[in-house]
Image (cartoon, rainbow, N blue to C red; front, side, top):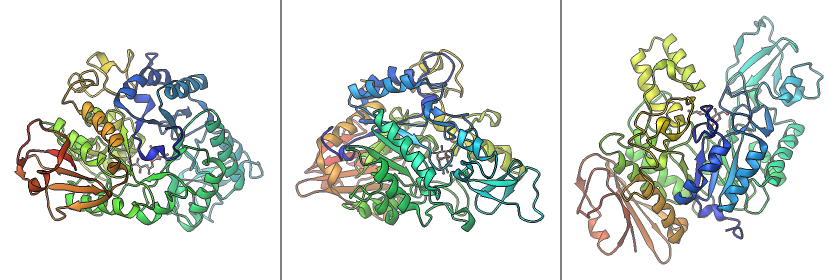
Length: 537
Ligand code: TEU
């Protein structure tokens, strides 16, 4: 694999949220030695690379997406030596480590910011984005809202700094070449340590123009990415994936241009944004409109074929559990978790599995006071102030809170699911005696074994990597079916999204094909609840 610079086109990437994966020192937080102790589990699953959510030093206001030292490990997770050991232990198992780079902003405790706010002529002042007070504007330190994005007053310099996420995450000034160079140097320092790739947090925000109210897709964005790529991403085999909520197939072709001038691929979120009320935000829940979902996936598959590259995912540390979201977390949990997996793994692109997805882990019911995530807490406060009932707020949090993904990994039926011998930082889902890794590894019929087999199939059948995509049964309200075709072979995937038995309009077509994987034991002419099949010829 080392020889092939595009290894990531056949690869499957596994995301670890370190604070929730495996605790090794009983402090209730997952850590790097804990990850090392679970590498053999990941090898059994068959993944090629691990995307590690941020482990750099951070005051953890946004769980590490607020970095105070890019070149050190947060003591919560271990030391730089632990990180070096993780890289080498993973390498022994042919697994690469992908670091999460938060380049849009730093923590307010980063030394650059501590310097920047000392005086207007400090050499680091220009590392951030400042504006003077307007005449008559309150300057007592309160948060001022300035249209798009927000500004926070700093008395020492009598100016506001700009931030797009929390007030503890001041935005870096990307128009300053010194900022960009400092970041590129840092990236190269990590590559020299043996890191195999990078996930770029909110990459579409890097070209922001706060004074023109532009947050994403700024005019200089792609120039910056090209410059960064030339300065830091041209190492053989390095994989890069940008998080780009605003991307569309046109911009994704730039980001993932096969000439390698920008990134390997981006995460796009068009499918993720479908199940909400029109005009509402992510907390205003709605069912998944299946036909729209099919259209969106089909458009991305076809638009990037041959001229870009997709990443394939449903879950990450910001999103709810997919089986609770688009499947059935009750009676048909196993069937629907596998159906969703089969659907995604037949597509063109690089699949990502978020920790616990391979077990069919579900959302968690927390009390309103138990939510930990900053985004959820802000929502609860805002909706209470706006008069929403606690019941409706809870429903939104259950459906969409980022904490759903952040509950500890369920390893076994031991106390705290085998995650920690201390008190976990966030509650373990109480379904862990039922849903855990120990119960699933090597157990025929488990969700884990389904993912393991899907990973194996991607390696064995080139049509999955390279075939062109065609949607079948476009108008069907219940079935998602498609083919992948290359010169020699055809793959056909058919999935029933409903919890009831329905006709299988493709049954004749399947007669001459071989079944590679399905989620029911015995064949049937109908499609049973959440039935999914992948056929080949
Ligand atoms: O997320 C970017 C982002 O836009 C999120 O705020 C997203 O809208 C939200 O989580 C959806 O629920 C990235 C990281 O993935 C996230 O964890 C960080 O909080 C954020 O950037 C700031 O760094």
